[in-house]
Image (cartoon, rainbow, N blue to C red; front, side):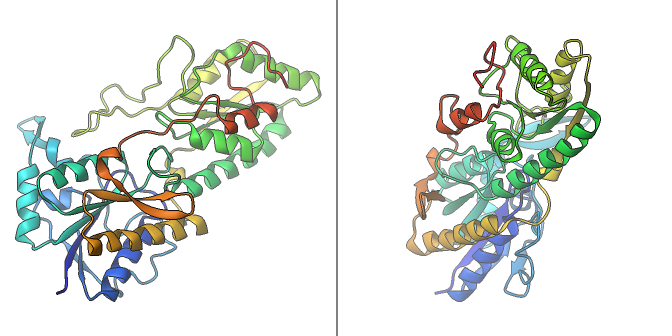
Length: 369
């Protein structure tokens, strides 16, 4: 008998989401199954928003498109759903309502595409009896149960391109250019972009920094005739004894309690200015440019593999699991393990490579190279 599959994209958008949607729809259609797309993440499940019927016609031409044709939300957590009461918002548990609606719509399985927050919600719904399959995505590449997440390669490419463009203008004006990239708790984008782009300093959340080694690096380059420097800063990076820079203390996302970060690049610039007065310092915040645009071939392929494997898990009846890349294989991993975070290992191979290339992390008095 044909199945009715529910599909949603939750959390922040990222390149490759449409590749997953397309793969799920085409793979399900191949089996004679029906796919209903819920709009705006779990908001489309909790609220009476009409789901979209997805067939080959609806996903034609979306493989190379960024974003998600279903829309998304990082606020719609059914277990802590923001509900307005007068002039205030209150988080309420509406998960039973979400479960009832899924059953009323005749959903045989729900495929949830998202990061750790979305996958935690999916696991919670699974414990309430919903047949759920997860599909991990995050540009931060910080989910421990999959070697790579789709979206990361495109974000890395965007950040690397930005480093290259800032290098030419920094060299022209003898400036110190600071590039702030995403990375709340993990510095994978910053580290990869610094290595691939040829930056001179990388400041990441996993290694609290002191400004003195950064100053020493800039001065040493000037003494060697290189009168410019490129500093890549993850948004979650912070100096020793300090804390992460917050864009707005009142910016906690309803239903998540997560405060938006921002300003790590400015913090580093303010620390540097009085110590390297011979240089102009400029800060560029890459921001949501990292989330947008055409996904790379790698992200299109990985997203397609994840989408097809998710449908296979539905066919196998292997629920409360997510798809993941282990080596060269796409495998199934229990959702209860999905929220584990993979940070940059300060003693790992990639950091060692960066140090040997002369990249400073701000944790040494004088860099070895």
